[in-house]
Image (cartoon, rainbow, N blue to C red; front, side, top):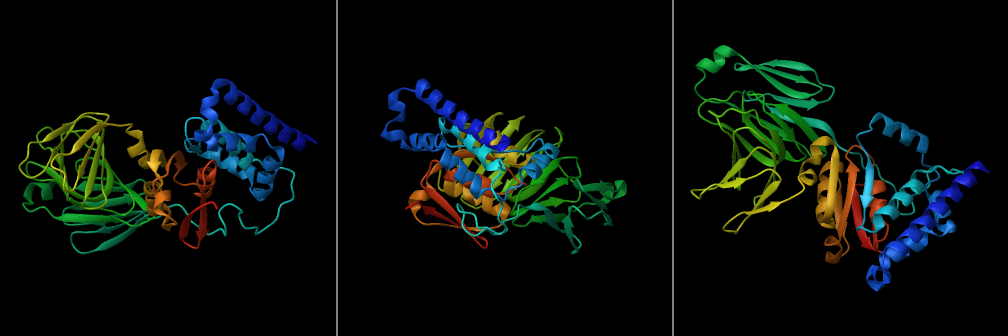
Length: 389
């Protein structure tokens, strides 16, 4: 009876949501152009629909989920499908997490996503190619101090930190470079010799010196990285990419250049300057993003919500009205899967949501399905994106 009472509460909440929406929005806001909102609202006011969702989630251990949330209170799973549907999604999220009095069945395939496959989130991992030819496979479990002729490389749970020998800095004339590569499904943190902090995203390569010498502190990037640069006015920090260079003194910014056709630099604080060939540099202010596209004469600078482009280093994926093909590409790098779209039309569907990087991907996909005509099917390490018939 107690659990049935809780179901009744959920049902009452859904009715209140519907009443609120009908009172707060004019009739034109729920016409044919908003059929998705109306359909979701009707579903949430149907107790049989809610009970059916409970059956689908009968095997979900809500108590364990909430214990996990308490341990990692800075992480969350949230989805927003349009401005109106946000409240509705909250109610459905409660239904998904609620473990009712319905009988549990083991090994029951998920009705929304098809046969379940283990798509695990990524981990801290990297391969460090030392200048002397040695290779180190890095992960959370590795604790080591590696001697090189330039200094000591220290690896701990926080990443890689360099301890430089004073005599080597004074006598070394030619910089030697290490290369750190981050595989698909990985990320890693690095502290450079000058104290600059670097967060490296999946499928990224960073080439950097053991110590910085000369007038500039230069590194080479492929992929995506977030830099928190130690200020040194006498030695500007330069991130060199295939699409041009980013020059800074001391600042925090994100650079994404996964291919040789597009580069985006997003500035959180400080100032940076984009340089390419002999053209005049382009200054970027905090809260701005510079996008350089192959074939364009000039880069585009625009105001953005920087959180959308930097949250990945804080273990979150944030999407806001982003094309589904771009969302799936980002998730695929981290969860290590392939994605196949049934049609080109589905790629341009705009969705919004926030996902804890270290959580299961399936709740996000389920909620993407809510209020849309899209269905996600997982088979092994492939996600098929189909249109609901």
